[in-house]
Length: 438
Image (cartoon, rainbow, N blue to C red; front, side, top):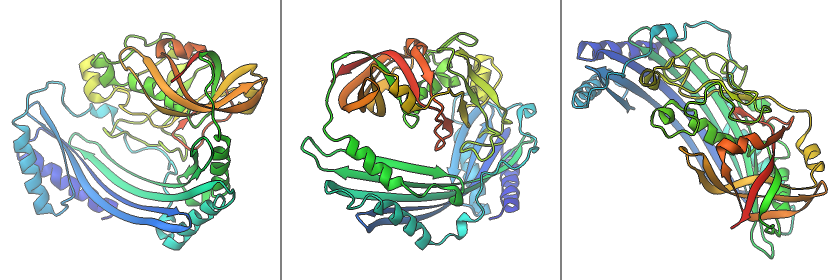
């Protein structure tokens, strides 16, 4: 189904819903094609291809709201589906805050191409994809006598969608994504360490395809013979691939739903310091070829660049239309796009070399953060550092604290942004962090 056919079908569904009792309607029609290949020890373990299409509809009926989805794309079947959905919605409780966004907030169709779609990806044959996975795997396979197993993973996806709302919104989007990863498991006297490395891109010809297996093997070898260290306060560096794990609790606390339900430790802190002045983060949906780039969000709200945290001061929340009405706040967007962090002047290695004693965190294992209070505890793995050098790997340790205080201990940000994620975050260094043995 091409773009125009999707628009025509969405218009028909909306027209039918309005004639049969809905006051407002929004429809999203999507198609997704994906491939997933797993190779284990030079043998193809799985090869999956998926083609999906469907329609989702949001219905507003007499101050009552419901959302439904179906993969039945025949017009007559869709009409019956909509009729049943409208009838079901009538049994729900009224909610005066449920309505489509103000049309003034919608994306109006302007802007240059964000360059998020690889038109060549759909024509790439299966052999090319398998060869890429094999190449990555062979960088680690039998490269060390301690290797137990090596697995490589190739995946890609192609998504196209249109969205139409009964009060004027019309928009379409398309994006692609490609990923290549390797996982290595080793045998050692103290256990079976494993680690991985991955690369992501929007365009296949921009995907880094070399040294993936090599890096996965190197990371795994470094984890052999880990030790616990004495509990206490340490200087800590979190590498850029794991720093996002510390940001996610902040992100959850910035959501309109968390704020309204009083389950956010950042309630009432807009325009107040919540972190060290070194922390600055922007949401930039209009970044060229960003993993989260978009002209509009899933409600049709126009995408704009805006500060989230500026020199440690909270500047804005993620507020969707519904919770904006309930909170009496202007909607911004209920979700992030590309989150860009300001960087420092030194690399992670340079920061580590300045340590007298500290820990490099390269992974988080379990744990949780209380969204209401900000109290957290996470299992960690990484390396003990003394006199600027890695001494030995570390495991069976927890990092604990409270998010309301923890971010004020941020002492330096690296210059090494993680380019593999929509969270463009560098390595982060914190001082006086509580680490304890499990």
